[in-house]
Image (cartoon, rainbow, N blue to C red; front, side, top):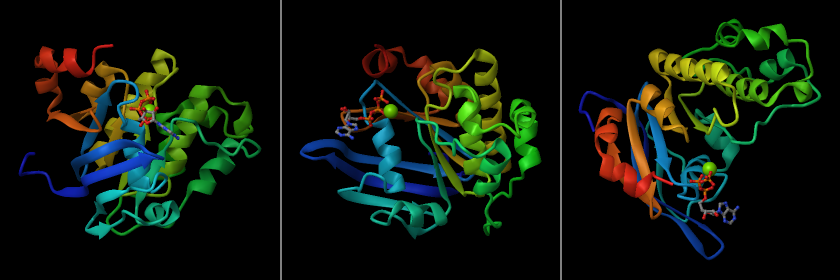
Length: 240
Ligand SMILES: Nc1ncnc2c1ncn2[C@@H]1O[C@H](COP(=O)(O)OP(=O)(O)OP(=O)(O)O)[C@@H](O)[C@H]1O
Ligand SMILES: [Mg+2]
C-alpha cells in the first residue's frame, strides 16, 4: 500500500463463522483516510460477511478491527457505530412510516472530532429526487430512492468511515451515476469508504484501491488499473 496514505481503518486476520461454516479465513485490509476500497469477488465469496464482521453484526471469531487506533472487534454494533463506523446494508433500511425529511433528521448526529460534517442540503444536492420527495413517507419510495435515503441517513451521523454493500444493485443507470458521484464526493471530503460493488466498471471508477476476495480472504489487492490489466486474476476470481 502507498506510504502516502494515512491508515484509518485496519482489519487484520479477521475470521467469522456461521455455525460450523468457516466463512472468513483471515481477511486483512487497510483503508486510508479518504480512500475508497472496493471488495470484489464472486457471489458467496464473503464480501457482505466482511462488512458485517467489521460492524459487529456477525461476531468475529478471531482478528482485529481498528478505527483511528480504537479496537472494535468484539464490541456490539451500536458501540461500533458510535466509534465512527457507518454501515449501509444491502437491504435498504428506511423508517417506512416516517417521511424522507424525518428519516434524514433521525440520522443526524452531533459533529464527530476529526470527521467530516454533513448536512441535509448537501444530501439534496447529490440526490435532487430526495428533495422533491422530502414530505413523502419513505415506505412509498422506489427501491432506488430508498437506497439514496439509506446512504444519506448514514452519512448524516458524520462517520469516519462507511461500509456500503452493493448500493447500485437494481438501480436505473442515471441513479447509479448519482450514487457513484456521491461516493466520489465522500472520498474528496476525506471519508473512508469500503464498498462492495458487483459492477466492475463502477468499482474501477470510484475506487482508489480494489481487493478481490476468494477462499475467505483477500487474493488480490491493487489499483483499479492493476486489476484491469490483470486478465488472469479477473478470469480466476471474478468471471462467473
Ligand atoms: N446468515 C447466514 N447463515 C449461514 N450462512 C451464511 C449466512 N450469510 C451468508 N452465508 C454464507 O456465507 C458465505 C459468504 O456469504 P456473503 O453473504 O458474505 O457473500 P457475498 O460475497 O456477499 O456474496 P453475495 O452478496 O453475492 O451473496 C456464503 O457461502 C453464504 O451462503
Ligand atoms: Mg453480499
